Length: 78
Image (cartoon, rainbow, N blue to C red; front, side):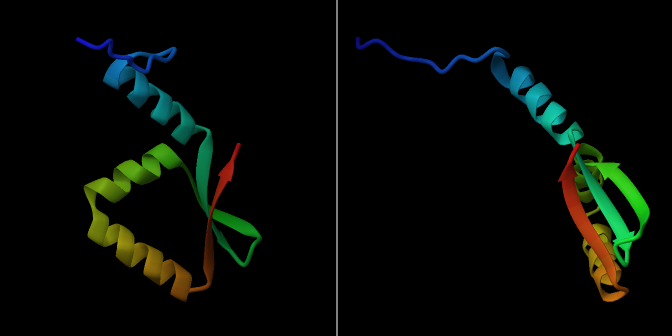
């Protein structure tokens, strides 16, 4: 049988990759602002994704209403 190569990293397996993705998500945040001045909502990207997965319809409606009302939505690194 030929030798199989596996891709190993510092964190092994599914839970290691999941932990890495959560860490990356926590280092970014979603900001909803009115006219580039006052920040209305600031969430970590991880929380934003969890909320979007739990209620995708409400998330889509909220994004559309926010954009129509003149709010800006941005994702930034910390």
